[in-house]
Length: 462
Image 1: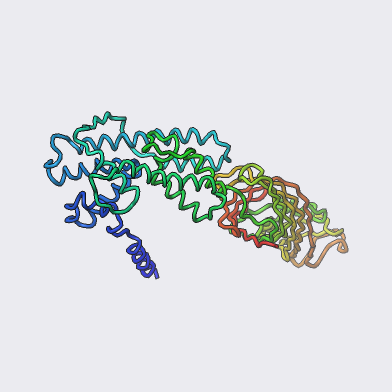
Image 2 (image 1 turned 90 degrees about the horizontal axis):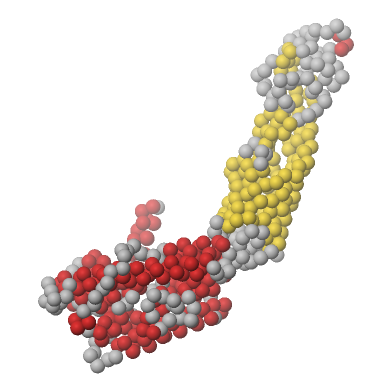
């Protein structure tokens, strides 16, 4: 089966690999025809580099092609200019500009009225746009050695993503500006009409913006005099606003929780029918929660995820299991004291049976802090009523009993039933991860009492 998945994955990769008829290498093949004598792996590396440089600034492609030409034709076309060094400096400086722009955007983003979770995620998103670089290096571009129209032509081909034969008579600078205006209008329209866009259209606009960051307001360079009327942080905040709102929630629900780990809770049994039998050991039972089923309702207080975004009210039945008791079946006890009004003397053992538990709870919970839009920590208050029942059996160990009054002695084994009712109001904290709209992973902790880890399924009640 694993081999089948690997084969399918390999076939998918084959079909999604970009063909060179649609790559930047192909678009510029007339500038670098000698490249196509190389193997595809080499061409793929060239294409990847061109894509990265075009995203920084399409004007870099002209200088990249010059330095490739210098390498291929051994300086036959480069004259006295070291294009390789020139391109290296230009690339470094564009990276410096990009990093400065990212830092400025992050400072601006922090002051926007976004929820903290949204600010943190967008800050991380912007940080990923930074690139490794050195300090700014003066470029000293030799203007006499640069064909400006050819430079604009290279940028134009990148912007339109189509092949076009170079012509000396064309004004490629004007065409670059017109194409940049068209792209700018696309982002302006997405920004101003984001509420009308589908989720797919929003994702496409954000993904496309990564290729044209130099078109957004407050970028270091004014790209051919074209920039949007808004900053990139504003663009992301608006288009991704719905992602960070609590729309896709179940309000009225039936929930079923299964706990894969539950720490035992100790219940002390205080019963006057066992006044001195276990004089060195309290009579306790240990219980844990196996699962719960309940009905709940969520009151949404605000759409943005954060402190007290909503209140959850739940009524639940808890399936409690009695795990252990404080009775040690191999221990032998001597001289029991008054039990059920009679006196038991001699040697005996104690065992338990027919342990039962019943518990119901009502609770209120609310989130406190979101790590991201799915993972958060919260707190609440739980009222729980529980009832426990255990039968204890005293086994006679010898055939005779010692007593001053035979009528005061017990000759048979004794069974006594002990019951315990518990009413508690207790604080709780929880950590929750929303796997999907219907499934949630959670961990609950009641200080000093309970720790449960499990999965919860929520069924929406219409």
